[in-house]
Length: 235
Image (cartoon, rainbow, N blue to C red; front, side, top):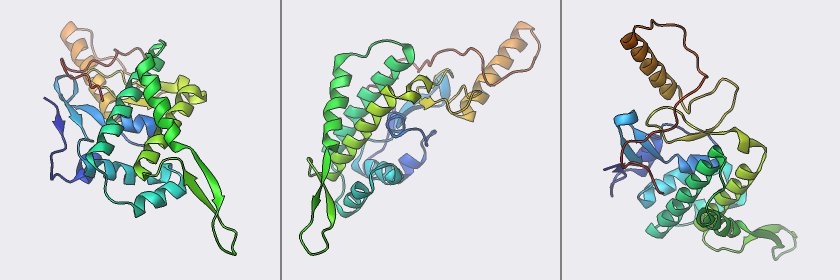
C-alpha cells in the first residue's frame, strides 16, 4: 500500500518531503503523488488531509493571483471536500500529461474535469462603494479554495495548449512517475537523484555484462516510467 498523510500528521511535513517542486503549477499538483524508493518503492500521496492541502496552497501562494492569495489567507481551513476536489483534478491532470507526452488524444473525462474546474477561476472587477473609486475583484465562485482549484485548472489549459507543452516530459527513470518541463537541453530526468539512479543501474549492467565502464551522459534514450506493480496513481 502507498504511504499517505495520516490524520494529525503535520501537512507541512508531507508537502516539504516532495521530491520535486518548482515545475508549472499543474505539474506540481500532479507530482504530489510519487514513488518513494525507486522501482521497488511504494506510492506516496502527500495530499490526503486538509492540512496538507493548505500547506501545498501556502507553498504556491506566489503562483496564484494576488487577490486570491489574500482571500485564501483570510479564509478558514480547508475541509475534506476541498481535498477530494483537488485530488480529482490531480488525476485528470496526470491523465492529460500522459496523453500529451505520449502524443495521444486525451479521454473526454479528464478534459471535462479540467474545463469544469477552470470555470471556477472566472472573475471580473467592480467598483467598491466610497469616494476612492477603488476596483475590487469578484469571482463567480465564493469559496477561495475552489477558486484556487480553478486557477490551477486554467494554468493547465495554458500549459497543455501553449509553447511549453512540447517540453513536458515524463521522467524516464525506472519507478518514477513524475512530470517536468525540460528546462534545458541536457535535462533528461526530473531530479538529479533519478539521474544518479539510472547511471548506477547502467554501470551495474555494464559490469555484469563485462562491458566496462564507459562515460555516461545525462541525456540519451531512457526507459519509460515503470512504477511498481499496483502503484499507478489515479488521483
